[in-house]
Length: 405
Ligand code: GLY
Ligand code: MN
Ligand code: MN
Image (tube, rainbow, N blue to C red; front, side, top):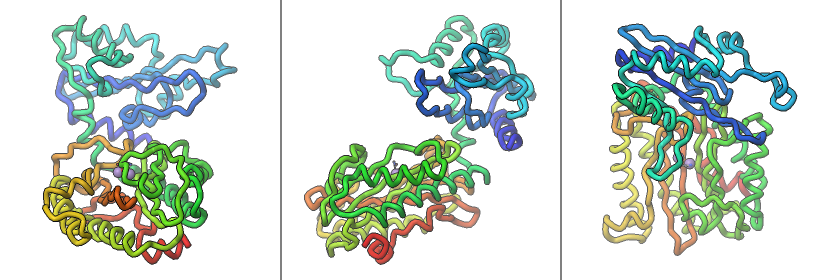
């Protein structure tokens, strides 16, 4: 494990210039014991799930050194919060030699910054009128006091690393997908007309928690009938009518890696003829696009081909006459990179290479017919083409009618 995180830090160092200092803040701990979600870049480079810590990577000439600052445990707080990690433990867990307590950070950074040229901080995207968080304030303070420095968001370097997954990452994603599959199969077999969408969500969460997944990758979309035509529907609180299709867009997380799967099925176990033809159209498009996935292909190419195929299907379904009308029934893009973030950090303009994981998720949404269909799988790009990581989650019409009846 240490080796994996160590090699990521080495890779990041090769992306850095001499004079660069990367500063990555861990997330803060919410004041009540709600579940803690680590900053994705901090996790990627350290593997640690502790709050408040700060990771630094400096590069001078050709030498790079990692530093880690962690919170010091206060004995009186132990009864509330448990024991905090010690510097020795952090050293052992991360393989980083330079580990100190956070109370040393200000002195350390004040001595370090005069010798650096560029500061790269993990600042979240902020709107112009947002209150500055701790990270943004740190960058602002550094900017005012060390005016020779130039600044960059660290995502510019991290996206090149994070868009190519190693074997361990594929294992984590596969596990997240497997747990999601259990939830989907539970829904297929146990849900029935009249159920509230919330009950289906509970089935999904039951399987995720029972499998020891600490959290979901994103909040589930469980949408019956017309609700499925709202792309980011998240209320999940309506009763599901007898003849509805149900759209599930769900994903558990495992070691912070997120699955992202969409399935659409008839609650009664039987598609109406119209639902069947719309579903078959989306499935055909999805299969054709998945076939295109291989190194060298760009997301833009997948998008243009999808648009072309969807236009053809929408004409066959009698929904549009002119090509330009297709956005009425298909409003989003074909997919995104998947990893620590559900919409993972990546350079979308770069061609795909082996190790990229993307979603392929076409849909057709017909509000006036109360039909929304999306089918989404998670695809690993391999040397020769692709592997569907979510292959075993049923999506064929006959399978769905069998499993959901
Ligand atoms: N679940 C969000 C998406 O499919 O992109
Ligand atoms: Mn999704
Ligand atoms: Mn998606």
